Amino acid sequence: MFSTLRHHIEKKIPLTDDEFTLASAHFTVRRLKKRQFLLQQGDVCRYESFVVSGCLKSYHTDDQGVDHILRFSVEDHWAGDLDSFINSTPSSFNIEALEPVTLLVIDKPSLDQLYQRVPKLETFFRLLNQNALIATSQRVIKNLSVPASERYQLFLKANPQLVQRIPLKDIASYLGITPVFLSKLRREKPGF
Amino acid sequence: MFSTLRHHIEKKIPLTDDEFTLASAHFTVRRLKKRQFLLQQGDVCRYESFVVSGCLKSYHTDDQGVDHILRFSVEDHWAGDLDSFINSTPSSFNIEALEPVTLLVIDKPSLDQLYQRVPKLETFFRLLNQNALIATSQRVIKNLSVPASERYQLFLKANPQLVQRIPLKDIASYLGITPVFLSKLRREKPGF
DNA sequence: CGGTTTTCTTCACCTGGTTTAAGTGTTGAA
DNA sequence: TTCAACACTTAAACCAGGTGAAGAAAACCG
Image 1 (tube, each protein chain N blue to C red):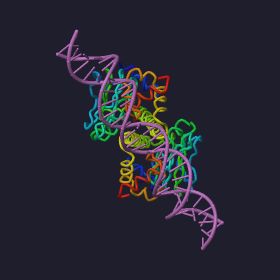
Image 2 (cartoon, rainbow over the protein chains, first blue to last red; image 1 turned 135 degrees about the vertical axis):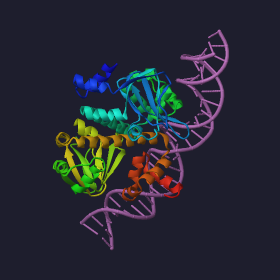
Image 3 (cartoon, helix red, strand yellow; image 1 turned 45 degrees about the vertical axis):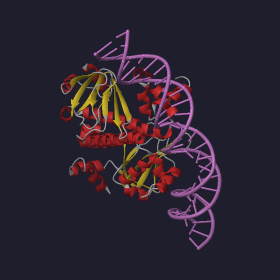
Image 4 (tube, each protein chain N blue to C red; image 1 turned 120 degrees about the horizontal axis):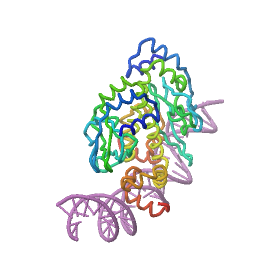
């Protein structure tokens, strides 16, 4: 349970036993069933959540009622809405379990306290957000420069395991196309 | 010159005179003429650059030779390719001056050293990247959920000053449409 | 000032992706 | 074990936005 988190952090920043014990005391375990919400659009996101097992989707529902998936969070990754978490503003995202999920969650006061007590962890979260920024920037460019058919191929190549686990309509939403069109792509282009 | 940078940092993190003096010693001044490149696709991005005056565009040129603008960097903001800067990998971006530009630049060894000497500045850059991540995530969602015509209106509202300074074709590229189509939108929808 | 380059616009035509609607297959709760 | 809800596919009509080519207007520079 907590060892997963430790291993996750130590991929970037080595910790002493004491540091990790101190850190883990700030997290609490939380479980969600399939289709249960970790966060609902309009609510304030009170927690950053480390995914121990399972898979969630973060998506925005627009004014026409259409969902747009920003990201999938699988085990060994994080879920949460940074904007809402940092600024305590109503979130514009839903975060929903696609499978039964086990999480380690931490709230903002605890995280701030943790930064004070274990400054290394500020570095850790800086690196985490840095990587997320890089990935998100690349996604902006790819959405602009790569046609949907190729974006689908890229997604398949980058996340072969995910495709088996999540509904195609969610992949379509992530790619920015309709399920209908994704279906057409899959029919036309061979190799899935 | 340096006072602009100090004011910029202190919007987030107050600094003592000593801290700022120490910090500013790590930066150097650099000037670019219009159309000059701060970074060329394929090169490693050696510097993070604070824009004292002027304006630049960061864009990726795809394999068909089409440019896609990721961001504009105006005075009191930053320019650079984080991925290439952090990992010393060849950048997939060009950064080009749209106007004569004055920069304060810092290289990676200096920045790492600076984090050691003035830990507050690690917090500063963490906040900076946090905000960039939030903004970029929102852009992903808007590109997926808002039609081009509305995206143009939003851009106008959010950056009224920019529109006077930069060519429309660059706005089109940022919005992910062709200049031809932007021109059509401007004709059809009144109020620019 | 005059010539060159860059930017912006217009038009006719094309295409990638949407919409709606109907049909099949699968899941799951009572 | 049945019925309802959901996931996926197909097809046809349609539309947002792209392409190519060409000219007009600005901006740049010697």
